[in-house]
Image (tube, rainbow, N blue to C red; front, side):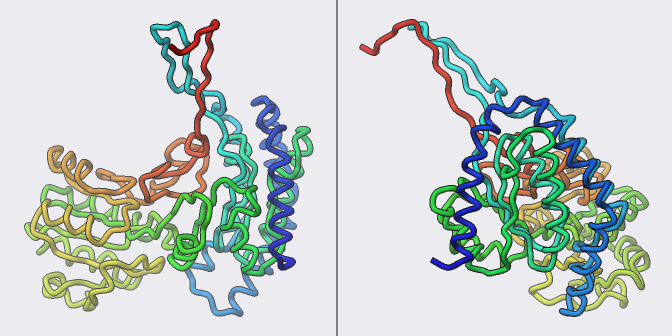
Length: 419
């Protein structure tokens, strides 16, 4: 076994050893750890900015794109956002021990279904250093131990963030090893984490591009919770308010182009395309490249030709595809065929059309008259999220505290025996 594989197994053993203390921990102790970690993040903000600057310089030298660099970069405002997210998670109810269901059988057995932690969670992610804080905090609050493996591009930043999380745990009297980071860039470490680190890891959550997700799908030997790419759609229905639709789509595309909830594809109802398509081209001129089908290009020469691949791409860049569709039925079929089942929106003042879109589009998040960039656990009141799960099991949509628990049954009797 290689040094990297041994390293991950050691992390797994220490994480497993931390679980009993986490299971016993009262909410007050977990919240104290999170609040202490938030204070430490603020106190070490200068160190974190310096570490992140070194990460960004190395990434730029490696020739990374603008969207990738945006995800990697930390600013004082983003660091404050991380700290505030830790405090927001601390303020949320404890998900562990929730009574999910209760029944009393005719024979007198009292049966309860209660929420419990999953166990040891391996988190594999790319570029976004804030994931270390979000994932560590959510795992801690939900009673899970976390093993974090960020991209090598964010290694310096991740080290400072994880140190703050571990300092918070120690200050609250909880085991530091409840949050750990893989300390080697060797890809063999990822492979060992996907194999379960000798039985120590219960669940792996990847957060990154198609390459990472494909690797996890191919090599994982433990359960996974997949976050696929975000080819998100905004559909302008014929009953849309034009001004509202344009403002929402501008935000959905340009607020942050490198997030998974950014709109990548715009559909326009043919009934209003004559006005809406040129308005979109005017709004995005000089700030976002539009690639369209023949109908869209015929309405405005500023729109470039789209290839067949453009309908299925998560650009993570200042590029969007535009297609003209014949009404709601075609729009729903288009989204279900080309979308990634992440987040899709309809812009309309017709409640019946909105109801059908929300019911028939098969995505984790469906939105009426609002930006797709609301696809975020913090915006959903979860404090933060580990990612957006685009599958159907065991969670879907933003993965927050409740989604990081499973359940068990508690049965109480008074001497019953089964006939």
